[in-house]
Structure formats: C-alpha cells, structure tokens
Length: 146
Image (cartoon, rainbow, N blue to C red; front, side, top):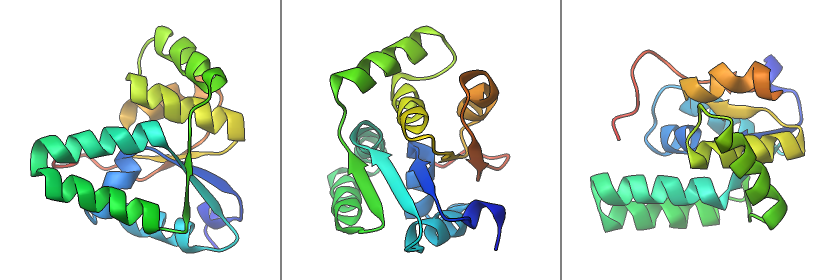
C-alpha cells in the first residue's frame, strides 16, 4: 500500500478536482483515494465554485454543468459548506500572502480537518511547511490546460 493510501481524510483542491475530471497526470492517485471506502475525501464548495467558473469560462455551460452533476453524484467526495469561522480563517490565510482566495479555503479546511491536500498547485505546496499541513503532490512541470 502506498503511503498516500493509508486510510484517512483527504482534501481536494481545485487543481486535483480538474485533474481528476480531465484525466490529467495524478488522476489515478486521486481516483484511488476517493474510491477507497476506508478514506474520506472532502471538497469545499468554494473550490467547486472555482472549478465551475474555470470550466464555464474555458469550455462553456455544458462542461461546467457536467462538473457539478458529476461531483454531486460522487459518493466518494463529501462537499463541505463554509461557516463564518472557516471564512475568517481563509481570510487570515489570504492576508498572509502567497495564495489565491480559493486556495486559502482549501488550506483552512485541511487545517481544520488535519488532513493533507491533494494538489499539483505549486503555491500550496510551497506554503505547506509554513502553514502546517501536508500535501499529496500530483503536479508535473506543465500546468492544466484550463
């Protein structure tokens, strides 16, 4: 069993979500994690919204709607709403610099759940030691085509 497959909690960021849906590098790692009944995978609605707008802008309404339909139907991913406490924490993280507002939400959720973030986003990876969370790296040298 790979170290990332040890039973536990995982947080998906927008990069991971799009990598999974677009079958980009790292998609199999994500699929293995979310399909394992011993794991719990979480996605902030803020990050789902970010993926939605990215697909809407680049690929149109149909692709964006399919994303939402797929994620809401996926029993392996738990969607997480954002209470005021997490919004404040994300704002504090954002104020510290180095991350987008949406990325600040994924970090806030990971800290709250004490769970690693599955990502290929170099900004998140860079700040992981400073902000005290782990990363399961799925990135490569080339960014997603979105």
